[in-house]
Image (cartoon, rainbow, N blue to C red; front, side):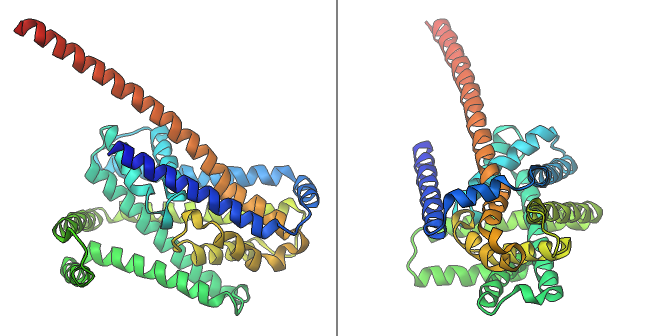
Length: 356
């Protein structure tokens, strides 16, 4: 099992690296790299540092949310542990299509540190629900207030992203609040799998129904803890705002003043709504392309440098940081498991001596 997981991780990392190389080769193959580096070096580093801090606050808000919700469920963890889990989830979300690997791995590591798997799943489900609500709400609001952001060539991609996010949120809410409708949807899904002649349908149905039990537990929690749920959603909203603030700080680092904070914020909101649901690891390629389209009026000749800085702060820098966290945690876990194995061997050795 461990070998299978390692193979999948290596495969995903290789795909991740290939996509990065291909994306930036296509974007910068005809550009003067010396001129681009000079542009980046000329940026005001104070605003760049503020951008990095804003993104750090983004992760801190998620960690605080996870810590607070786990406390409600009776699992107490430190803020540092919550931040560690958040970064582990971010890394695996970044290297897997549609961010599908982050939450399962995060839950896995939580359970390894004696956190209830059911509680971990519920907390991350609420976090995800809040993230979807914030993404869709801000994406629609910003598109309405700043319609010029969505050009004719982008509108269909934006609507596709909005639709996929909307469907995902709807399915989550239906799963949480309507067991009857969810069971009907599961039966339809199973019938489609039968038509497609998918193997091991019973196992798949069982896993889906187990997931449904988790959603029902979420409904009970929300009904009994409305204030805690509302607080969690508001914290996610603030978290998303920290993320959407980074391009404005990059904008100010170049000394620009034509566009105000909300206009740049709106551009980032529409960008994220457009690309976040697409099945590419870290939305690599599509994020950079859409950034160049949406932010062109704001950054002008500094567009390529702005994209590198903004994407570097919001994504690549913290992928590297989260990878370091993953490696350190893996080494620590290996040491802990090694100590447990040694203790087991000692106990077995004593038992053998007694039996002898």
